[in-house]
Length: 434
Image: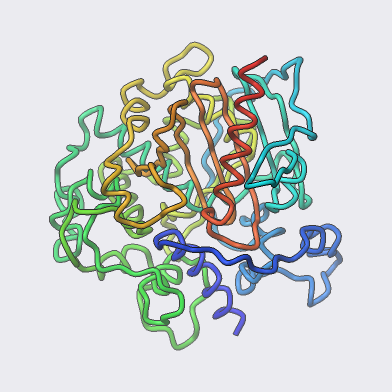
Protein backbone atom coordinates (compact mmCIF):
# COMPACT_ATOMS: atom_id res chain seq x y z
CA UNK A 1 0.00 0.00 0.00
CA UNK A 2 2.85 2.40 0.86
CA UNK A 3 4.58 1.55 -2.42
CA UNK A 4 1.42 2.26 -4.39
CA UNK A 5 0.90 5.60 -2.67
CA UNK A 6 4.51 6.70 -3.31
CA UNK A 7 4.20 5.72 -6.95
CA UNK A 8 0.98 7.65 -7.32
CA UNK A 9 2.46 10.84 -5.85
CA UNK A 10 5.60 10.90 -8.01
CA UNK A 11 3.87 9.78 -11.17
CA UNK A 12 1.30 12.48 -10.64
CA UNK A 13 4.05 15.05 -10.20
CA UNK A 14 5.65 14.13 -13.49
CA UNK A 15 2.33 13.84 -15.29
CA UNK A 16 1.23 17.31 -14.26
CA UNK A 17 4.14 18.81 -16.12
CA UNK A 18 2.78 17.60 -19.44
CA UNK A 19 -0.79 18.81 -19.20
CA UNK A 20 -2.70 22.04 -19.41
CA UNK A 21 -3.39 22.44 -15.73
CA UNK A 22 -6.09 24.74 -14.40
CA UNK A 23 -5.34 24.82 -10.72
CA UNK A 24 -8.04 24.89 -8.13
CA UNK A 25 -6.81 26.19 -4.82
CA UNK A 26 -6.23 23.10 -2.69
CA UNK A 27 -6.10 23.30 1.07
CA UNK A 28 -2.37 23.27 1.65
CA UNK A 29 -0.89 22.05 4.93
CA UNK A 30 0.66 24.82 7.06
CA UNK A 31 4.38 24.83 6.16
CA UNK A 32 5.40 24.75 9.81
CA UNK A 33 3.35 21.57 10.31
CA UNK A 34 5.35 19.82 7.58
CA UNK A 35 8.80 20.79 8.83
CA UNK A 36 10.76 17.57 9.49
CA UNK A 37 12.68 19.16 12.36
CA UNK A 38 9.58 20.15 14.33
CA UNK A 39 7.96 16.81 13.46
CA UNK A 40 10.97 14.85 14.71
CA UNK A 41 11.37 12.88 11.48
CA UNK A 42 14.14 10.25 11.54
CA UNK A 43 15.14 11.19 15.08
CA UNK A 44 16.09 8.50 17.58
CA UNK A 45 17.98 5.22 17.62
CA UNK A 46 15.86 3.87 16.10
CA UNK A 47 13.32 6.48 14.98
CA UNK A 48 9.74 5.89 16.03
CA UNK A 49 7.84 3.85 13.41
CA UNK A 50 5.61 6.78 12.44
CA UNK A 51 8.68 9.05 11.99
CA UNK A 52 10.64 6.79 9.66
CA UNK A 53 11.22 7.61 5.99
CA UNK A 54 12.02 4.75 3.62
CA UNK A 55 12.02 4.30 -0.15
CA UNK A 56 8.52 2.85 0.14
CA UNK A 57 7.05 6.01 1.70
CA UNK A 58 9.50 8.73 0.64
CA UNK A 59 6.96 10.49 -1.58
CA UNK A 60 4.03 10.31 0.81
CA UNK A 61 3.86 13.99 1.76
CA UNK A 62 5.39 15.49 3.85
CA UNK A 63 8.14 12.84 4.01
CA UNK A 64 9.86 14.48 1.06
CA UNK A 65 10.64 17.51 3.22
CA UNK A 66 13.24 15.32 4.91
CA UNK A 67 14.00 12.91 2.09
CA UNK A 68 14.84 15.40 -0.66
CA UNK A 69 18.09 16.31 1.08
CA UNK A 70 18.75 12.75 2.29
CA UNK A 71 18.20 10.70 -0.90
CA UNK A 72 21.56 8.92 -0.76
CA UNK A 73 20.43 7.38 2.55
CA UNK A 74 17.49 5.68 0.86
CA UNK A 75 19.04 3.83 -2.06
CA UNK A 76 22.02 3.38 -4.42
CA UNK A 77 23.78 6.49 -5.74
CA UNK A 78 26.89 7.36 -7.75
CA UNK A 79 29.07 10.38 -6.96
CA UNK A 80 29.72 13.21 -9.38
CA UNK A 81 33.25 13.86 -8.14
CA UNK A 82 34.25 17.41 -7.31
CA UNK A 83 37.87 16.47 -7.97
CA UNK A 84 40.92 17.72 -6.11
CA UNK A 85 40.45 21.49 -6.42
CA UNK A 86 39.83 23.48 -3.28
CA UNK A 87 36.26 24.82 -3.19
CA UNK A 88 36.05 28.11 -5.04
CA UNK A 89 35.27 31.05 -2.79
CA UNK A 90 31.87 32.62 -3.29
CA UNK A 91 32.27 36.26 -2.37
CA UNK A 92 29.51 38.01 -0.45
CA UNK A 93 28.21 41.35 -1.69
CA UNK A 94 28.32 44.36 0.61
CA UNK A 95 24.68 45.11 -0.19
CA UNK A 96 22.38 42.17 0.46
CA UNK A 97 18.73 41.49 -0.19
CA UNK A 98 16.29 42.00 2.66
CA UNK A 99 13.65 39.50 3.79
CA UNK A 100 11.12 42.35 3.71
CA UNK A 101 11.44 42.91 -0.05
CA UNK A 102 7.80 42.91 -1.20
CA UNK A 103 6.18 42.32 -4.56
CA UNK A 104 2.78 41.71 -6.15
CA UNK A 105 1.69 38.14 -6.78
CA UNK A 106 -1.79 39.00 -8.06
CA UNK A 107 -4.48 41.68 -8.01
CA UNK A 108 -4.30 43.45 -4.63
CA UNK A 109 -1.99 40.73 -3.32
CA UNK A 110 1.51 41.32 -2.07
CA UNK A 111 4.02 39.14 -0.30
CA UNK A 112 7.57 39.42 0.97
CA UNK A 113 10.68 37.50 0.10
CA UNK A 114 10.48 35.68 3.44
CA UNK A 115 6.76 34.89 3.10
CA UNK A 116 7.21 33.61 -0.47
CA UNK A 117 9.81 31.13 0.73
CA UNK A 118 7.65 29.91 3.59
CA UNK A 119 4.51 29.66 1.46
CA UNK A 120 6.31 27.66 -1.23
CA UNK A 121 7.95 25.20 1.20
CA UNK A 122 11.47 26.35 0.39
CA UNK A 123 14.39 24.24 1.60
CA UNK A 124 17.10 26.53 0.26
CA UNK A 125 17.35 29.83 -1.62
CA UNK A 126 20.53 31.34 -3.05
CA UNK A 127 20.74 34.63 -4.96
CA UNK A 128 23.94 35.68 -6.72
CA UNK A 129 24.45 39.09 -8.32
CA UNK A 130 27.53 39.73 -10.46
CA UNK A 131 29.01 36.55 -9.07
CA UNK A 132 28.54 37.50 -5.41
CA UNK A 133 26.14 35.98 -2.90
CA UNK A 134 23.52 38.52 -1.87
CA UNK A 135 21.10 36.12 -0.18
CA UNK A 136 21.30 32.58 1.24
CA UNK A 137 18.74 30.81 3.42
CA UNK A 138 18.00 27.20 4.41
CA UNK A 139 14.88 25.56 5.82
CA UNK A 140 13.36 22.18 6.74
CA UNK A 141 16.60 21.19 8.46
CA UNK A 142 18.65 21.31 5.26
CA UNK A 143 22.34 22.12 5.76
CA UNK A 144 24.66 23.85 3.30
CA UNK A 145 26.70 20.69 2.70
CA UNK A 146 23.67 18.53 1.88
CA UNK A 147 22.79 17.70 -1.72
CA UNK A 148 19.13 18.18 -2.60
CA UNK A 149 17.09 16.17 -5.12
CA UNK A 150 16.84 18.20 -8.34
CA UNK A 151 14.23 16.07 -10.07
CA UNK A 152 13.76 17.39 -13.60
CA UNK A 153 16.57 19.93 -13.35
CA UNK A 154 18.51 16.74 -14.10
CA UNK A 155 17.18 16.96 -17.65
CA UNK A 156 18.90 20.30 -18.22
CA UNK A 157 22.27 18.73 -17.41
CA UNK A 158 21.51 16.00 -19.95
CA UNK A 159 20.64 18.72 -22.46
CA UNK A 160 23.86 20.59 -21.73
CA UNK A 161 26.05 17.51 -22.19
CA UNK A 162 24.24 16.48 -25.39
CA UNK A 163 24.52 19.98 -26.85
CA UNK A 164 28.22 19.98 -26.00
CA UNK A 165 28.84 16.70 -27.83
CA UNK A 166 26.87 18.00 -30.83
CA UNK A 167 28.87 21.22 -31.00
CA UNK A 168 32.19 19.39 -30.82
CA UNK A 169 31.13 16.97 -33.57
CA UNK A 170 30.79 13.77 -31.56
CA UNK A 171 27.03 13.73 -32.22
CA UNK A 172 25.09 14.88 -35.28
CA UNK A 173 22.03 16.95 -34.39
CA UNK A 174 19.73 15.50 -37.05
CA UNK A 175 20.87 11.89 -36.69
CA UNK A 176 18.39 9.34 -35.40
CA UNK A 177 19.20 8.01 -31.96
CA UNK A 178 19.42 4.48 -33.33
CA UNK A 179 22.66 5.47 -35.10
CA UNK A 180 24.30 5.60 -31.69
CA UNK A 181 22.21 3.03 -29.82
CA UNK A 182 21.21 0.19 -32.19
CA UNK A 183 19.14 -1.35 -29.41
CA UNK A 184 16.61 1.43 -29.99
CA UNK A 185 15.65 -0.06 -33.37
CA UNK A 186 11.96 -0.87 -33.27
CA UNK A 187 11.35 1.80 -30.61
CA UNK A 188 10.04 5.35 -30.89
CA UNK A 189 13.56 6.69 -31.29
CA UNK A 190 14.53 4.52 -34.27
CA UNK A 191 13.76 7.48 -36.57
CA UNK A 192 13.64 10.31 -34.03
CA UNK A 193 16.45 12.85 -34.33
CA UNK A 194 18.59 14.07 -31.48
CA UNK A 195 17.04 17.53 -31.90
CA UNK A 196 13.48 16.24 -31.67
CA UNK A 197 14.42 14.30 -28.56
CA UNK A 198 16.22 17.25 -27.00
CA UNK A 199 13.20 19.50 -27.59
CA UNK A 200 10.67 16.82 -26.59
CA UNK A 201 8.89 17.03 -29.93
CA UNK A 202 9.10 13.28 -30.53
CA UNK A 203 6.04 11.22 -31.36
CA UNK A 204 6.39 8.74 -28.53
CA UNK A 205 3.71 6.40 -27.25
CA UNK A 206 4.52 7.21 -23.66
CA UNK A 207 2.03 8.41 -21.07
CA UNK A 208 2.44 9.97 -17.65
CA UNK A 209 -1.10 9.41 -16.36
CA UNK A 210 -0.79 8.41 -12.73
CA UNK A 211 -4.47 7.49 -12.36
CA UNK A 212 -4.01 4.71 -14.91
CA UNK A 213 -2.06 1.78 -13.44
CA UNK A 214 -1.19 0.73 -17.00
CA UNK A 215 0.42 4.10 -17.79
CA UNK A 216 4.05 3.98 -18.86
CA UNK A 217 5.08 6.23 -15.99
CA UNK A 218 4.46 3.40 -13.53
CA UNK A 219 6.86 1.11 -15.37
CA UNK A 220 9.41 3.89 -15.78
CA UNK A 221 9.55 4.70 -12.06
CA UNK A 222 9.90 1.07 -11.08
CA UNK A 223 12.55 0.45 -13.73
CA UNK A 224 14.48 3.46 -12.44
CA UNK A 225 14.46 2.15 -8.89
CA UNK A 226 12.60 5.17 -7.52
CA UNK A 227 9.70 3.02 -6.37
CA UNK A 228 10.15 -0.54 -5.04
CA UNK A 229 8.85 -3.41 -7.16
CA UNK A 230 6.15 -5.63 -5.77
CA UNK A 231 6.94 -9.32 -5.50
CA UNK A 232 4.69 -10.16 -8.45
CA UNK A 233 5.96 -7.35 -10.71
CA UNK A 234 6.79 -8.60 -14.23
CA UNK A 235 7.60 -5.37 -16.09
CA UNK A 236 10.95 -3.81 -17.01
CA UNK A 237 13.47 -3.89 -14.18
CA UNK A 238 16.08 -1.49 -15.60
CA UNK A 239 16.00 1.76 -17.53
CA UNK A 240 17.40 0.06 -20.62
CA UNK A 241 14.71 -2.62 -20.51
CA UNK A 242 12.06 0.06 -20.18
CA UNK A 243 13.29 2.20 -23.09
CA UNK A 244 13.37 -0.85 -25.37
CA UNK A 245 9.58 -1.19 -24.94
CA UNK A 246 8.59 2.39 -25.92
CA UNK A 247 6.96 2.59 -29.36
CA UNK A 248 6.26 5.41 -31.79
CA UNK A 249 2.92 7.22 -31.83
CA UNK A 250 2.56 10.24 -34.10
CA UNK A 251 4.88 12.46 -36.08
CA UNK A 252 8.28 13.49 -34.82
CA UNK A 253 8.91 17.23 -34.74
CA UNK A 254 5.26 18.30 -34.74
CA UNK A 255 4.67 19.58 -31.20
CA UNK A 256 6.16 19.76 -27.73
CA UNK A 257 4.97 17.24 -25.15
CA UNK A 258 6.80 16.78 -21.88
CA UNK A 259 8.17 13.22 -21.66
CA UNK A 260 10.74 12.00 -19.18
CA UNK A 261 11.41 9.04 -21.46
CA UNK A 262 13.07 11.37 -24.01
CA UNK A 263 15.66 12.41 -21.43
CA UNK A 264 16.37 8.79 -20.52
CA UNK A 265 16.92 7.94 -24.20
CA UNK A 266 19.42 10.80 -24.44
CA UNK A 267 21.16 9.48 -21.34
CA UNK A 268 21.68 6.15 -23.12
CA UNK A 269 23.19 7.96 -26.12
CA UNK A 270 25.59 9.90 -23.87
CA UNK A 271 26.79 6.78 -22.09
CA UNK A 272 27.19 4.84 -25.33
CA UNK A 273 29.20 7.44 -27.29
CA UNK A 274 31.46 8.40 -24.38
CA UNK A 275 31.78 5.04 -22.65
CA UNK A 276 31.19 6.84 -19.35
CA UNK A 277 28.43 7.21 -16.80
CA UNK A 278 26.60 10.52 -16.65
CA UNK A 279 28.21 11.05 -13.25
CA UNK A 280 31.71 10.68 -14.69
CA UNK A 281 30.89 12.82 -17.72
CA UNK A 282 29.45 15.65 -15.63
CA UNK A 283 32.38 15.50 -13.23
CA UNK A 284 35.01 15.60 -15.98
CA UNK A 285 33.39 18.39 -17.96
CA UNK A 286 31.89 20.63 -15.29
CA UNK A 287 31.97 19.71 -11.60
CA UNK A 288 35.70 19.41 -11.06
CA UNK A 289 36.37 22.69 -12.90
CA UNK A 290 34.19 25.06 -10.87
CA UNK A 291 35.55 24.37 -7.39
CA UNK A 292 32.41 22.59 -6.24
CA UNK A 293 32.31 22.30 -2.47
CA UNK A 294 30.70 18.85 -2.48
CA UNK A 295 30.31 15.85 -4.75
CA UNK A 296 26.93 15.79 -6.47
CA UNK A 297 25.35 12.38 -6.99
CA UNK A 298 22.96 10.44 -9.22
CA UNK A 299 20.28 7.97 -8.18
CA UNK A 300 20.88 4.52 -9.76
CA UNK A 301 18.60 1.84 -11.13
CA UNK A 302 19.00 -1.83 -10.21
CA UNK A 303 22.04 -2.40 -12.43
CA UNK A 304 23.86 0.82 -11.58
CA UNK A 305 22.63 3.08 -14.40
CA UNK A 306 22.37 6.74 -13.41
CA UNK A 307 18.82 8.05 -13.82
CA UNK A 308 19.14 10.79 -16.43
CA UNK A 309 15.74 12.40 -16.20
CA UNK A 310 15.24 12.93 -12.47
CA UNK A 311 18.21 11.41 -10.66
CA UNK A 312 20.70 14.23 -9.95
CA UNK A 313 21.27 15.71 -6.46
CA UNK A 314 23.52 18.70 -5.61
CA UNK A 315 24.07 21.40 -3.00
CA UNK A 316 22.57 24.86 -3.21
CA UNK A 317 25.93 26.64 -3.45
CA UNK A 318 27.29 24.30 -6.13
CA UNK A 319 24.17 24.92 -8.20
CA UNK A 320 24.85 28.63 -7.74
CA UNK A 321 28.34 28.08 -9.12
CA UNK A 322 26.88 26.20 -12.07
CA UNK A 323 24.27 28.91 -12.71
CA UNK A 324 27.00 31.55 -12.67
CA UNK A 325 29.01 29.45 -15.14
CA UNK A 326 26.02 29.45 -17.49
CA UNK A 327 25.38 33.18 -16.96
CA UNK A 328 28.93 33.96 -18.03
CA UNK A 329 28.60 31.98 -21.24
CA UNK A 330 30.55 28.99 -19.94
CA UNK A 331 33.38 30.90 -18.25
CA UNK A 332 34.51 30.36 -14.67
CA UNK A 333 37.13 32.58 -13.06
CA UNK A 334 38.34 33.67 -16.49
CA UNK A 335 38.60 30.15 -17.94
CA UNK A 336 36.29 28.88 -20.70
CA UNK A 337 34.92 25.64 -19.20
CA UNK A 338 31.88 25.13 -21.43
CA UNK A 339 32.31 26.31 -25.03
CA UNK A 340 30.46 29.59 -25.55
CA UNK A 341 28.55 28.20 -28.54
CA UNK A 342 27.07 25.47 -26.33
CA UNK A 343 25.55 28.00 -23.92
CA UNK A 344 24.45 30.22 -26.80
CA UNK A 345 22.59 27.31 -28.41
CA UNK A 346 20.70 26.62 -25.20
CA UNK A 347 19.87 30.28 -24.60
CA UNK A 348 18.37 30.88 -28.04
CA UNK A 349 15.34 28.74 -27.21
CA UNK A 350 13.11 26.72 -29.47
CA UNK A 351 9.87 26.90 -31.42
CA UNK A 352 7.25 28.78 -29.38
CA UNK A 353 4.37 27.52 -31.52
CA UNK A 354 5.36 23.92 -30.94
CA UNK A 355 5.56 24.64 -27.21
CA UNK A 356 2.12 26.29 -27.20
CA UNK A 357 0.63 23.06 -28.50
CA UNK A 358 1.20 21.51 -25.07
CA UNK A 359 -1.31 23.92 -23.55
CA UNK A 360 0.86 25.12 -20.66
CA UNK A 361 -1.05 28.38 -20.45
CA UNK A 362 0.75 29.76 -17.39
CA UNK A 363 3.97 29.58 -19.39
CA UNK A 364 2.65 31.50 -22.36
CA UNK A 365 5.48 32.68 -24.59
CA UNK A 366 7.93 30.03 -23.43
CA UNK A 367 9.75 27.47 -25.52
CA UNK A 368 11.58 24.29 -24.54
CA UNK A 369 14.98 23.81 -26.15
CA UNK A 370 17.69 21.26 -25.46
CA UNK A 371 16.02 20.36 -22.16
CA UNK A 372 15.94 23.98 -20.89
CA UNK A 373 12.97 26.33 -20.39
CA UNK A 374 13.27 29.66 -22.24
CA UNK A 375 10.71 32.44 -21.44
CA UNK A 376 11.73 34.72 -24.36
CA UNK A 377 11.45 37.76 -22.09
CA UNK A 378 13.17 41.14 -22.24
CA UNK A 379 15.99 40.02 -19.92
CA UNK A 380 16.66 36.87 -21.99
CA UNK A 381 16.30 34.63 -18.95
CA UNK A 382 16.60 30.88 -19.20
CA UNK A 383 15.73 28.25 -16.62
CA UNK A 384 16.08 24.68 -15.40
CA UNK A 385 13.07 23.37 -13.46
CA UNK A 386 12.04 20.35 -11.44
CA UNK A 387 8.92 19.12 -9.69
CA UNK A 388 8.23 20.07 -6.07
CA UNK A 389 9.72 23.53 -6.72
CA UNK A 390 13.30 23.22 -8.01
CA UNK A 391 14.66 26.18 -10.00
CA UNK A 392 17.85 27.48 -11.55
CA UNK A 393 16.91 30.91 -12.91
CA UNK A 394 19.55 32.76 -14.95
CA UNK A 395 18.99 36.43 -15.85
CA UNK A 396 21.84 37.76 -18.00
CA UNK A 397 20.48 41.34 -18.18
CA UNK A 398 20.34 41.62 -14.38
CA UNK A 399 23.64 39.69 -13.93
CA UNK A 400 21.60 37.42 -11.69
CA UNK A 401 21.41 33.74 -10.73
CA UNK A 402 18.67 32.39 -8.44
CA UNK A 403 18.62 28.80 -7.15
CA UNK A 404 15.54 27.66 -5.26
CA UNK A 405 15.20 24.16 -3.82
CA UNK A 406 11.86 23.16 -2.35
CA UNK A 407 9.59 20.36 -1.16
CA UNK A 408 6.19 21.80 -2.07
CA UNK A 409 2.94 20.07 -1.24
CA UNK A 410 1.80 20.48 -4.88
CA UNK A 411 4.46 18.91 -7.10
CA UNK A 412 3.88 20.80 -10.36
CA UNK A 413 5.91 24.01 -10.66
CA UNK A 414 3.08 25.48 -12.74
CA UNK A 415 1.14 25.82 -9.48
CA UNK A 416 3.59 28.41 -8.11
CA UNK A 417 4.75 29.78 -11.47
CA UNK A 418 3.11 33.20 -11.17
CA UNK A 419 4.47 33.96 -7.72
CA UNK A 420 7.88 32.47 -8.51
CA UNK A 421 8.25 34.64 -11.60
CA UNK A 422 7.04 37.67 -9.63
CA UNK A 423 9.69 36.99 -6.99
CA UNK A 424 12.42 36.54 -9.61
CA UNK A 425 11.39 39.81 -11.30
CA UNK A 426 11.32 41.73 -8.01
CA UNK A 427 14.77 40.46 -7.09
CA UNK A 428 16.09 41.40 -10.54
CA UNK A 429 14.55 44.87 -10.39
CA UNK A 430 16.04 45.52 -6.96
CA UNK A 431 19.51 44.36 -7.89
CA UNK A 432 19.59 46.26 -11.18
CA UNK A 433 19.41 49.45 -9.12
CA UNK A 434 22.47 48.56 -7.04
